[in-house]
Image (tube, rainbow, N blue to C red; front, side, top):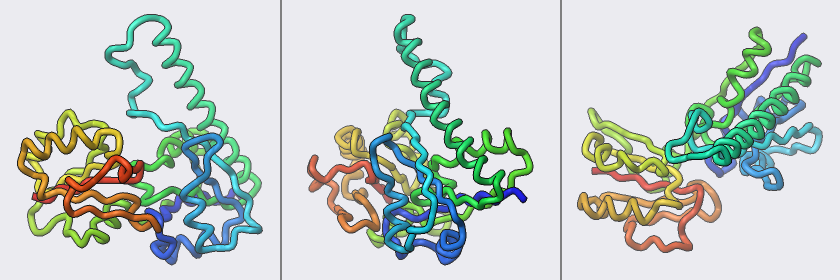
Length: 255
């Protein structure tokens, strides 16, 4: 019998935000697949689970997922010219695809031996999750594969809760943007009542300038590492210093 694959959202950081269903499945499966952003790094998702469960008897598969900027990043980049740039893009593309294929093979080998596998991901699997980079490839190789996706608490809702904010009421509209793509931020601020900017650490100064020009600084909240032990919340976004910026951070603008 072929095993079943679960994709589990483990929440933003607080182990008490793991759902009862996620805990039950993690207790039962013999193998857990763990995504990592760096080959030599550790997994935040795994650290969350370890605080809630004893994993001593589990097989842990590490899956390295290099970060890429967009889904179409390797289809061509504006401003990249020359054979050297094209060669670098192709090298990166095949290197990343090799990592993904290796993870797919590792998962399928366990499933084909009748072993159930849980792939864990931070937050909710449906929101900017690494899992869906593998999903199509898995089904391409094994169309009858039994996959169940278990939702988790997202960093967006966790951050809003910690900041005591309502993201939307009645007919209000929400926009969620990776902050690296702020070319359309001014237009987005005009069209939506609430704007959530994720991973703002690298473009924070640019965001401040735009919010200032729109007179929205007083309507913005900065949340870093929501649900973790070192969580920081700034109701006055002007108080955020460089040392306060973090990869797991967001700005919520509520007009």
